[in-house]
Length: 296
Figure 1: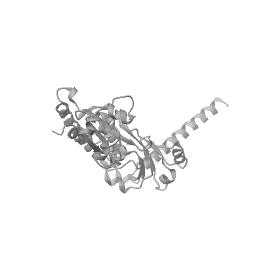
Figure 2: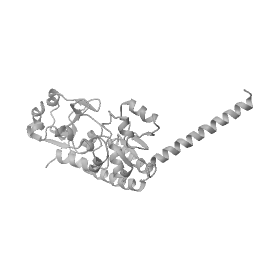
Figure 3: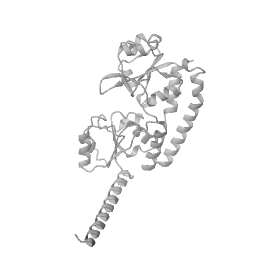
C-alpha cells in the first residue's frame, strides 16, 4: 500500500477508535444517569450507596447486603459467589456494579454478551481507602454533597475514637483482653477465626488484642484451637451466633467452655457488616466493642 493510502487508513482507524471511545463513555454516563438502574453486588458499596442517598438507583442487590434494614425491600439476585444471569437481567438494569467478589465467571460472561456494562470498584480494605470509596461513589452517582457531609462526620467520629483508644488500652498493653472474633463461613459451613483486616483494627482501637494472630484473614476453628487461643472475650458475628440463639447455647460449642470467655460468659454478638469492612458506622462499632471489652 502506498504511503499516502497508509496514512489515510491510519487516520481513519484513529477516528474510529475515538468514536468507539465516545460511544463507550456515552454508555457509561447513561448507565450512571438519573434514570440508571443498578444491580449492585457488594455489601460495602450498597451500604455506602444508602449512606449518600443513592439507593434510588438500586434495583437489585445480593443476599449478603443486609444493611441498612431498608435494603431488604429490594429484590435479591442471589449469593454473591453463586449468581445467575437470568435473575440479574430480569431486573432490566443499565449497570452491574460490584467490588469484584462475584461468581461464577460464566455469569459475568453472559452479562457482557448481552451488552450490560459491568463496573468493578475495589472495596475499601483500609480506613483511608474506604473513605475514598465513599467519596468516589458520591462523585460518580450525583450525590457528592451528601457524601462529603457523611465523610466529614465519619472522620470526626474516628478522631474521637483515636482520643479514647489510649484510655481503653490502659498503660500496659499486656492488660488488654484477648479477643477471638468468630465468623461463620456460609460457603464451607464452618466456623472461622478472623485474624486480621478491619475487625482486628477495630479490636485494637477498642483496647483489645487478637487472640489469634496468624497469616491470612481467616483460620478454620477446631475445638483444640479454640481452647488453645484462650480468649478473654469471644465476639461472634450474627449469622454464626444466631445458629445457637443465646450466649449459653453458644458456650456449649466444642472448645468454647474451655476458654476464659466461655467460663465467664463473656460471649457477645455483633453484625457481620459492622466488622468485616470499614464504613460510617465504624466509630460507633469501635465503641460497642470497647463496651464489651471494658464493661466497668
